Structure formats: structure tokens, C-alpha cells
Length: 310
Ligand code: PSU
Ligand code: MN
Image (cartoon, rainbow, N blue to C red; front, side, top):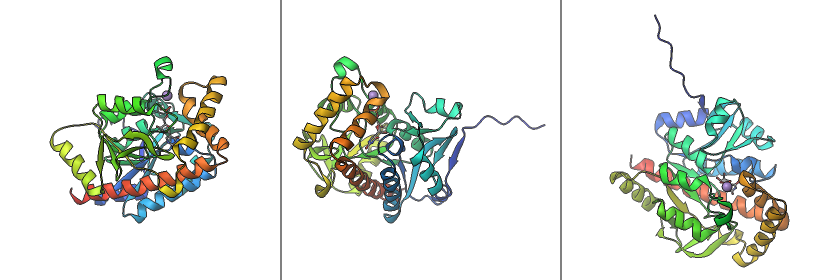
């Protein structure tokens, strides 16, 4: 008599990622909300492809994560990546609703929080994104604090970003990360970056200058039995940055627009990104793409350094 098999999670690896896992090659996770909710088509597809290519050039394997018709995908082949980049109405998934999308056979893109959960489950330790969610300006009224911060505190994945988006309250975001015990390491700079700009006006809590040093810091945390994630902030390259003072003008306008249209909840971040894209005549998007590419390069370096010491 055969025992009924226990139900298993509908999770599928791309061929490339499955092969990488088999041989113990370094893998870098990538989120998909940035594709469906963060950038317009076709710029989103160009970005998704170029980020994957950069990770391969650095000797690692990219794993873009998304839920497609209820299946949690770890790595998307090019046809799936292209289809996702054109999908209208995909859910934006965080810890609260990742399982909902799978159970209800829906299609959804993973935010930083949901991508971390999926990456950890797939044994992937490094993840590249653009900017994390954080404490929104006016959070003392709206209570809008991204679930990304809680996820960083509890899930052991290194997240490489370009700092917190300047649409957020960056001092409060750093305070929450500190309270929750999340190390914030800026790569090769003393200043914590603000996504489109290299500086936020705040010093970074920690600084390291090489992927090997970041890998060694992470190993030491593991030896101490400290769980939870790490945030690595990588300033946007000088030639692609939009200076803080200039960006602030657009951000103030975008926030005003969001307030007068009554935008709230999950819609806030996508609305602001889209509004800034218009207000800057597409320049914010060019910067966004450049910084994600830059983060992918560093994340691959960290993944390679971690794998070298396994
Ligand atoms: N960074 C980008 N574009 C994005 C995001 C980050 O360059 O679209 C997304 C990420 O998926 C992040 C999410 O997790 O925005 C945060 O949304 P919220 O503020 O609703 O938690
Ligand atoms: Mn929010």
C-alpha cells in the first residue's frame, strides 16, 4: 500500500537555476515587483534582461522570483520573463499574501519581503534589488511602514540595494532597521545612499569595501548564531545619479499628487515611481535601471565570495 504523499509546495526551478544548485554555483535572487509595478514596459524587460546578463558575466546565476498561475518560480526563462513584463494586473506580493497567490493559483510579483522568503526557501543567500521599502514620510499618521523591514529582521538573506528610496523617511527607516538588529553596510562609502542620489545626508551605520569583506561579515554573524538578513547599500554610479536637491523638488510634487488623489496602501510606492518617471521626463527610470545593474554586479560578487568559502 502506498502512503498518500504529503502535499508539497508548487515551486519550480528554471533549468539554469536547478543546474546551479546541483553544482553548488553562486546564485543571486531577483525580485519581480520592480518589473510589474516599478517600471513601464519595455524598459522593465530591458532592465530584467540586462541585470540577469550582468550576474552571469560575474560568474553567478540569476534567479528572478515570481508566482505564475499559482506556481512559485525560482528563476524565469526568457519567455516567462517577457510574458511577466507585459502582464497587467499581477498582484504585488509581500509576506501577507505570497501564500494567498499560490493557494488561489494567481499570478503575482514578489516584493523584497516575498523574494527574501522564497530565496531563503530555495537556499539562495544573496538578492539584488533597486531600493527597499521603508518607513514612509508621515508614517506617524498613516502607519505606512513596509513589511520589507520586518523581513530583513527575520530572514537570513543579504539584500543589495541602492539605499532607501528618497520618497521615504530615511532617518526613521534607519532607526527601525537598527531597532530590529539589521546591519546596514554601505559599500565603499561612509554615506548612506538615497536611491537616485549617492547621498541621503546621513552617515551609514557600517561600511565595507569589498565583496569578500561582506561575505566574511556574514559568515561571522552565522558563527555567532545571529539570524536575520543584512542590508548592503550600494550608491548609484556618479554618472547616473540625480542630485538630492534636484530630486527633492520632484518628490515633493509627487507626494502632493499622491495625497490629492488619495493614494494609499500598496499603491503608494508604484504611484510615486510612475509619477516621478513623468515628472523627470524618464530620467528617474534611467537612473533606476543603472542602479539595479550596479547592485546586480555587487550581489554577484558577494555570492561568488560566499560560495568560495563554503
Ligand atoms: N525598488 C524599485 N522599484 C520597486 C520596488 C523597489 O526600484 O518597484 C518595490 C520593491 O518590490 C519593494 C516594494 O519591496 O517596492 C516596496 O513596496 P511597499 O513600500 O509597498 O512595501
Ligand atoms: Mn506600504
